[in-house]
Amino acid sequence: MKKLNKIKNYSLKAAKIGKKKNVKGFTLVELIVVIAIIGVLATILVPTLFGKVKDSKIAAANDSAAKLAEQAAIVAAELEANGTTASFASGTKYKAEEGEGEGGTATPFEDALVAALPDLEDGHWAVEFGANGEVVAAVFGKDKYVGMYPNKATDAQSAALANAAAAEALLATAKGGTSGS
Image (cartoon, rainbow, N blue to C red; front, top):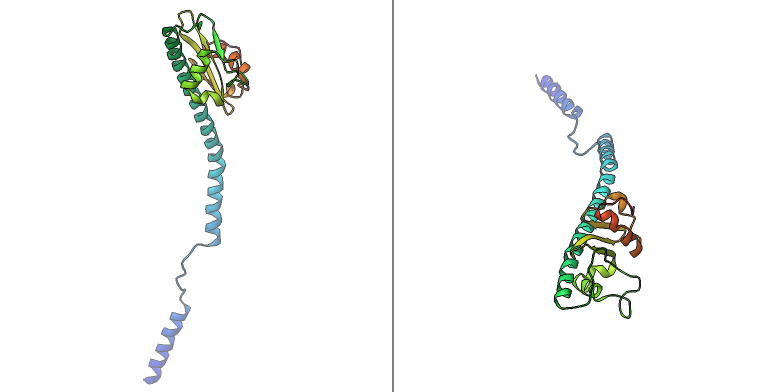
């Protein structure tokens, strides 16, 4: 009988030795599949993300142009109320000039507008007044993005604002014309 128990014990030990140990972790194939999935998602999402960033910068420029138009109307009303000899007749255009500032050629309107909106110093802009002294169009550009008022700038027009002359040319587009892009 003793021999029988020994054999039985040896067979149990052999069964335990043959069992697989529980190893925790990922296999190489699983890691490669996950990396491939991440690569595909990145290929799809990165260009979309850059497009959204560009769209948000154009939207911010459009908002800046609307603020410019609003502030231009306020400054024009204040100047007229104070008796400053600024003319805001139909078709009067104001724009940022190169070299504007100390000793520059800025009008009282442009000085007051830049004082009210300090961001104008860093960008290119233009404002056009209508027959009743209202702002009919405004263009503002900064860091290669353009915004227009009352019409919104599009992606195709965002690169068209290289300098103050281009800002004035885009006024017709801002009013609803077709030129300037």
